[in-house]
Length: 163
Image (cartoon, rainbow, N blue to C red; front, side, top):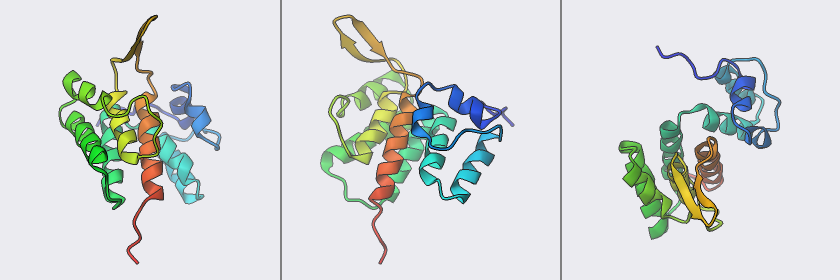
């Protein structure tokens, strides 16, 4: 069995500069999965989702986001379907050409689309995300987690009722 990447929730959140802004709860010395379970048990679902997004390796975080978008039942626009397909292609084969394809879907425009955020999670998984006059901008370590978190939270608000 692989050794966990982080021994405590405090260590997990401390590893990512922006993670503390995504949590209302204070991270504890609990193992991360135990901390996530306690958050969910107390109804702090947003915090639990945030911690999951940071805990998962990038590929798994993107896969999780894609699965949540698909499971929401929301009818996707054609560009959302294409973006989600691009993200899933990167999950299947996490290579630069698939990341670049994902990067072409709305990387610069604001969006409330869970599918586009899932695609951004793949696009921001590493490498250069944009070129500026000052030089290339590399993906930040927490960029995939933040985009996956957004996708999951948006998808949760669009779940189709079975009623």
